[in-house]
Image (cartoon, rainbow, N blue to C red; front, side, top):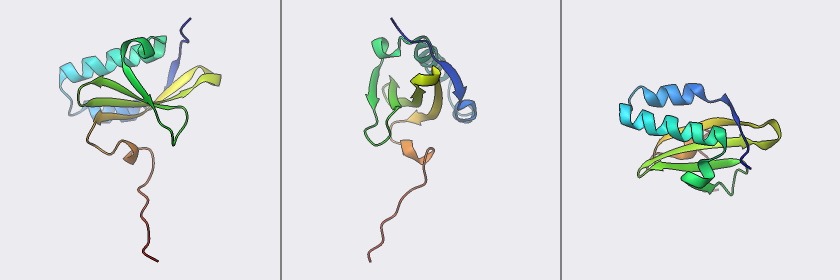
Length: 103
């Protein structure tokens, strides 16, 4: 039985990405969001967990386009962390860049 999840955060991430996306790209991302919400995404899309950030998943929406979501199973909720090209730094929206010092 699939778990139904409610979108609780990340609408601003989606809206920001949608400003420059084509209608076709918006349609496939919205379809993927509904699949995450109704629990069927794991059956339909290639999904990869983030070993450094448990609860976060990359959904391969289509070649070159990913969506990062954080699932909160205890709350039956999820939030959008990133939407965009695979080449873009997926974690840039979620966390500041770390730099190492030569010391």
